[in-house]
Length: 112
Image 1: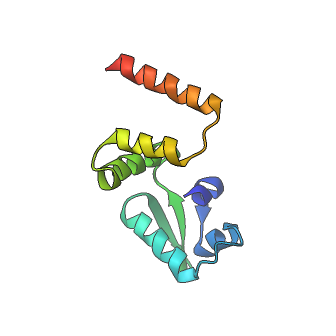
Image 2: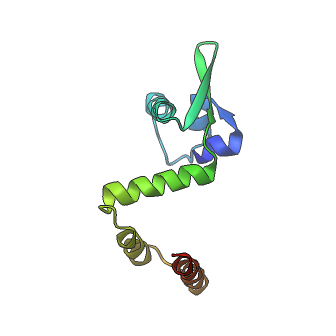
């Protein structure tokens, strides 16, 4: 999705070209992922010659919200605090990031 948002409209070959060299994916694998995202309503496509060009139907923020909600429901049994716990355990956070997270949680707590 990062590549689609950055480029606007992409072919399978465009995505393959934009991937880091260490991501050795087959053409068919990238094509399958793009088609699945299209079926889920995340991407749209238009036929050009024998191929398709794909573009984002959801802005980045909406996709992030949808993805996080899905992650919380499917991986963390609907418990957002479990996701936050794993985040702070698994990802190195700078003191500034910790403070930013505290502020966000403080704002969220005051809105409830």
